[in-house]
Image (cartoon, rainbow, N blue to C red; front, side, top):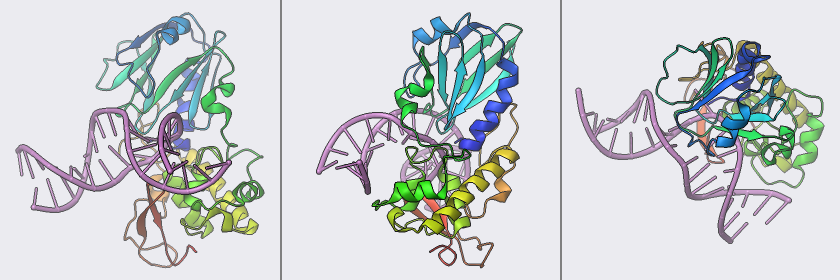
Length: 271
DNA sequence: AGACAGACCTGTGAGC
DNA sequence: TGCTCACAGGTCTGTC
């Protein structure tokens, strides 16, 4: 369920605990994640020291001298830093144990997440290589979106959720950003003006930035690496607010499926 | 190339 | 209380 703010919050939460620590063991209780956790990962990771914890899109990268772990939380994954004594709970699939008494524990009920091992530059990995720009970096702009969208018939909602266009815009924040920009989620991406894309890019940055500051959104069961809930939920204008009044005009918020995903919007404010 | 549907998997809440 | 059903924060893969 993590969207980009949750992933960034997780990164910031675990990094200070594991950077500079050496791995003493990897315990895999269930290797059946989106792709199986390989024995190669277990073998190569043990004895290594974590040099950095980076994020690219919604992937977390744990860098060592021998290679990197590419980790994705999928829909329901979470990471926690615990002591060696902490008893594993249901869906605690993988522990990475560190010298000094701490461990990093990966929990994922739906098992859509993954832990991959690569000995090369993780940014060159097939999964990461063709990703679009980070929304909070400079290459992302309204002009960029406008250029990429020319000729596209796809609904704008699906367009901005395509990680090959821009990363990190998940289902919640796509609805929120489109509301902020006043754009109807079904509008074909190729039929939106440059000026409106400027507004949309600004909204995407604003909503993601604010959510990161607030520590992520909590709907049902998301918790960050310390097990605390996020506090951004109260700030959602449309997501999960079907039939509630629009905060701008009072119209009832609609919910429809667009691009196979549940979408929330105001028919009066979004055109 | 682009658009779309299907797939992966478990938990939860609504409705009966 | 217990059953069934629809749906859930992601994104890869296959087909047309």
